[in-house]
Image (cartoon, rainbow, N blue to C red; front, side, top):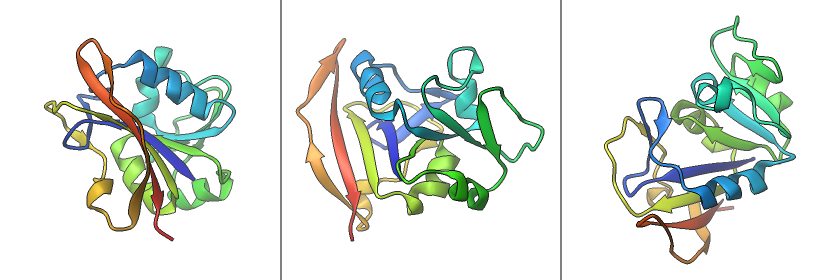
Length: 159
């Protein structure tokens, strides 16, 4: 499986149930990479989408302990094991923090947008630079959006 995330200098991914920032080029990259694939996310992440609705042109697999949660257009799983049985190998884990942590051991590739700023945050992604199980495979050039520097870094699990 794959995962995709945008992180700040401290590997923070969110605050108060939302992303730290929105970068149009990163949103387009997210769309290009995930369209046509299954996406795996938590209930709280789904709530941040427009109208709280599943993403179009993707199979939305939701991990939630709330067994009554049943959004239209999504499949809900109450445990990681049943989700892993249903998820295709090319699925993308898209958040939030607890879903990333639960599924990171099952992922082989990580598409990370590194943002050159630190924000106050309450949700974090595991630091792949400090994890010997992961290595950088590709690092893009720094780009800028409204004074905010960012770049794309692709990691792969060390075999």
